[in-house]
Image (tube, rainbow, N blue to C red; front, side, top):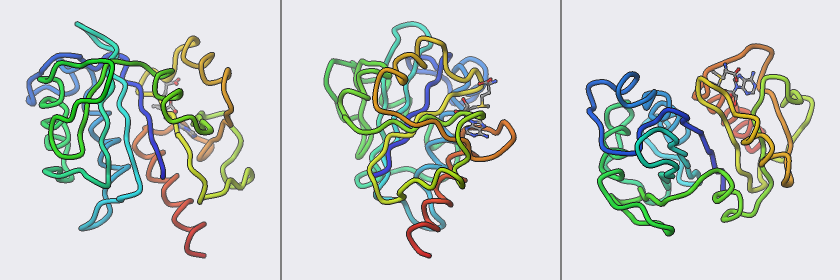
Length: 196
Ligand SMILES: C[S@@+](CC[C@H](N)C(=O)[O-])C[C@H]1O[C@@H](n2cnc3c(N)ncnc32)[C@H](O)[C@@H]1O
């Protein structure tokens, strides 16, 4: 199982307009592109992938939205489609446990450390100055939680949480890229590892 967690530091935690994802919704566009990059193949869905979005914007942070590739429905590969499922999830009352809003999409209260505890697996933190993914040949088969930042990266406190658990830090290339592009590159490396 591949798990991707993206932190949206400004992403709003109440329902929002689909007409202004980058502005009023707090860079929700970034999170939607990450959902699509993590889950979509051409005419198919990666069933072995879960995406966790940590929303840290106003008015009631933090909340986590989970897209489970094995169960997700009503998702098409455009930003508005992912955004409308996030919006539906935010219409539900977030509690300390998962509540399903639409098939394969759930919401709960919680932060980065809650997911790390819940999944209890090695964390792979994507950072520009991490070890080159092609040098550090990680096992494409093993279960992992990949953590990525939004346009703001990760805060010091978030990095401390990662450093406090079993982790590795990897880079997908020499340049600073958008989070969704990093996810595509990671998938590609893992797909190749599986099929070579
Ligand atoms: C747009 S970048 C963040 C840039 C932000 N200004 C910063 O300084 O952290 C979004 C996220 O993509 C990931 N990322 C970007 N380029 C990367 C690379 N070359 N290797 C690994 N991860 C990368 C990191 O997780 C980063 O937090």
